[in-house]
Length: 141
Image (cartoon, rainbow, N blue to C red; front, side):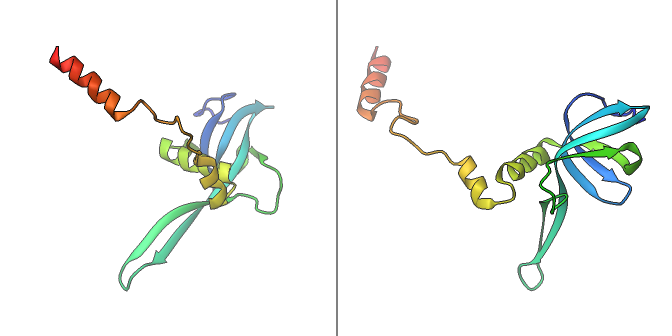
C-alpha cells in the first residue's frame, strides 16, 4: 500500500514507473483489496528537447506528449506494483500541463484558448479630459 500520499483526493501527480517512464496527470489514489490503485486522467509523458542554435550554443527545453499515443482514452489505471514513486507537480508545471491539455498539443488551439476579443468597453475608465478636470478639482481644493 502506498501510504506516503493522500488517498481519495485529486492531485496533480508525477509518476515514475518501474519501466522507467515518467508520466504526469491529474490523479486519485484509492485502495482496492489492500493494494493502491492510481486513476490518472489525461496522462502525458515528458519529452526533452535539445536544439543547436549557433555553432557553440544549445537550447534545451521540455515538452509533453500524450502518454499512450494510439489510444483515444483519456483515463488510465495504474497498479501499485507498476509505480516506483509519486510526487506532486510544482505550480509552474501544473500551468504548463493544463495549457498542453487545453490545447491538446496544438499550438494554434492554445493561442485561441488564451486570447480574448477586445470590445469597446474593455479597460475603459473614462475620457482623458474628464479625468484631468476631476484631478484639477481635487487638487485645487
